[in-house]
Image 1 (cartoon, rainbow, N blue to C red):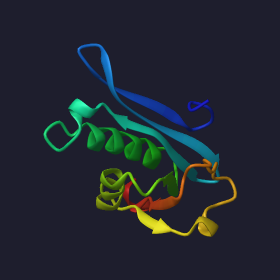
Image 2: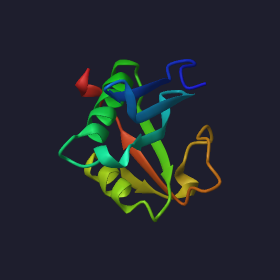
Image 3: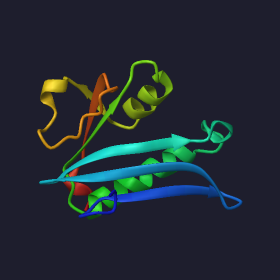
Length: 121
């Protein structure tokens, strides 16, 4: 599902064990949805930088594949994740501001947008 069109799915491994994941759903027209961003508890934080490496990998892919915006949904209780997204240039948006193609998850209450700088190409 994630690797259809220009979407993709990445995993971070440590000694052949999956310790992190991130996915990009291609919603068409330069719009992507970030999903499945998880890092195993023991590998979270700046010491390992797994979440950052996963995001950087997805961002480079998105730039190379002509994405213009990446959207995500999350929940308020995931404050560490929200801080991570904001630190990485995501901005909060109203649910009403999401593109029609964005696949809203029922549990999501907070939505963010990342604008890809086309001058990075």
